[in-house]
Length: 236
Image (tube, rainbow, N blue to C red; front, side, top):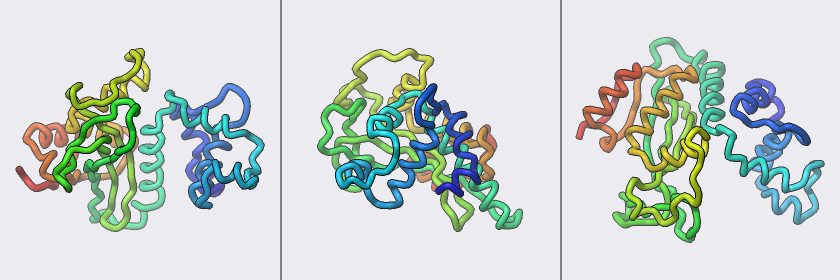
């Protein structure tokens, strides 16, 4: 993990994604700890419970970091994916290899939740029933052999009647929190264009975009082409 941090300059990347602290423990130290917890297969709670937590900071530091709404995690994951693909994967293949972006949505189910903000009534195309949760719109990159997640958005419903928990307060429209909530209630095809523009700005090397029939409308094809990607999809 330490090698990964240095190789891709994650400390600098966290800073440019608005993840920094005015004082106290560094953000890189806290983030590195959270990354390590994933690989040792033990939660922070169990570390404190068993007395195996050896870090000098308390759990309150971690919770404040995770609850910080100003950190742009989308920018972080998109830029990191671009670095990994451009530095480590693209040089392994020749110029004839087609690198592609892939976009798809899936059900992010929250069946027992009641007070989650923008929790919505979502149609599950697998079971053909409505469920509590979100639609998770995900953008990924592939060279035909390796797949990298680039960015994602949690999508709620445009109709207020389908939303169980509307935002509890009004946010300044200039803030990241307000933009994320607005995106969650936008059309998925519009959010798809935003994801593609972010990937393009981050320097992701791809010529084609793959998606399923649901996204394949004339307006979507024209918008994607205007960004600079050809589309591979089954027509409606």
